[in-house]
Image 1 (cartoon, rainbow, N blue to C red):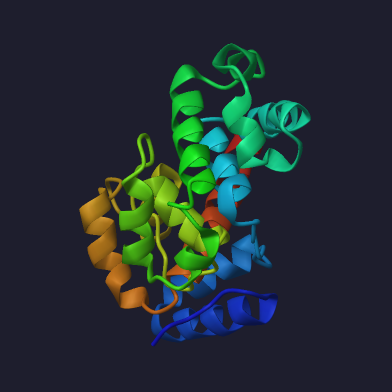
Image 2 (spheres, rainbow, N blue to C red):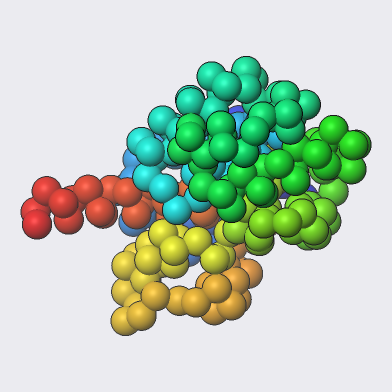
Length: 214
């Protein structure tokens, strides 16, 4: 069964399905509260936002993205390609991220990477297409599937916050590695995308509480 996350109603449907099969999700939901839709624009702009945010706090990522957008309005790939690497680095992008985004922008301009084409692919197809680009790994592809394409069953098992949320919620001694988490999440199909949103929301609440009490 193919599922989509295009609205809060889709999230509610997926959450009810998950809770009916796993009691821990009910506990997490009570603590996390309403889940955000978190849909982002697709294409180069959406992909660029994901790459920029890698290994950064939300505040830092937003600041850098704003500076890059000031240089390249609407993150237009044709304009991005023309910007000097030094100019982009001065806006806060690392050399590696500049290289990755330049390669992605060129692929879009050449017609080798098209958002409409990605919409027609399943998550594995999108993964294969995106990870063929220099510097784009599985995590970036999975996040693109989740938030730019609205795949209801996409799941970024390599995400450290998801792994830690599972450790806490399911009372594991150790954080599950990617392969173990994928095996565990197989039981959450076809709504792993909602499970991911719940785990992230739960993780934020738990960490905020730890900050207040610690």
